[in-house]
Length: 270
Image (tube, rainbow, N blue to C red):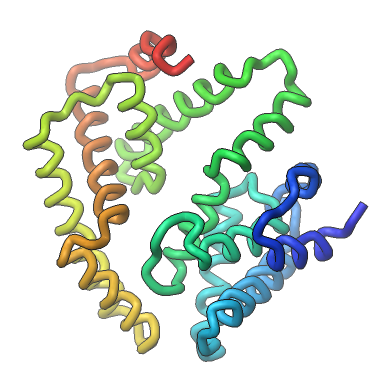
C-alpha cells in the first residue's frame, strides 16, 4: 500500500483522482489521528503548491505562517473526518475553480475549498460506501437523512447558545427540501439585505484588523463584490443562514419539537 505522503503528492498533481485511490485515502485515519506538526507540514506544502500552480508570488513568510497556522487549527476542528491526503486535493480543485468562483487566497477561501470537497457528490458517495461497508444494515438514504436531521438539531442548539452556525446554508437546504421553510419573496429579499449588511460589516472589521497588504487587497475585493452584488454565492449562503436562524426562532417560540417535525417529512427525503 502506498504511503500517505505518496498519495498526497499524487492527489495534488492529478486533477482526476481515481476512484480506487480515493477509496484508499478514505481507509486512512482521519486528520484527528495525526500530530499537529504533520498537519501543519502538509498544509504548508499544499499552500505553496497552490500559489505556484497559479503563477502567483508566494506570500511573505509572516503571511504564509499566518495562513498555515489558522488552517492547521481550523481544518481538524471543523472537518474532523477529513483525511490528511485530501487537503492538497481540495486546494488543487479549489484554485482551479471546480467549486465555483473564489475571491483571493485566504483562510476563508481555503476553508471553502475543503468544505466543498467534502460535500461533493463523488466524495460523499465513496464515504457512504465506506460507511455502509462497516454498517451494512443502515440504508444509504436513511443514513444521509439521519445525519442531516442531527446536523439540523445541533445547529439549532448552537444558535440558541449564541454560536455561529457555519453550515447554515446546508442545513437550510435540507429543511427546505422537506418543505419546512416557507418564507415569501419579500422575506427572502430581507434576508439578502441583512446578509449584505453583515458581510460589509464583518469584512470591514477584518480589513481593519489585518496589517497584511495582500490580505487587505483580497478583503477589499470581497467588499467590492458584496457591494456591487456580484458575490452571489457568498450573499446567498449568508442569507440562507439568516433565514435558518429565523426558522429556528419560530420553532422555539412556537415550542415545536424540531426532531419530530423533521421526522414527519422523512418521506420527502427518502
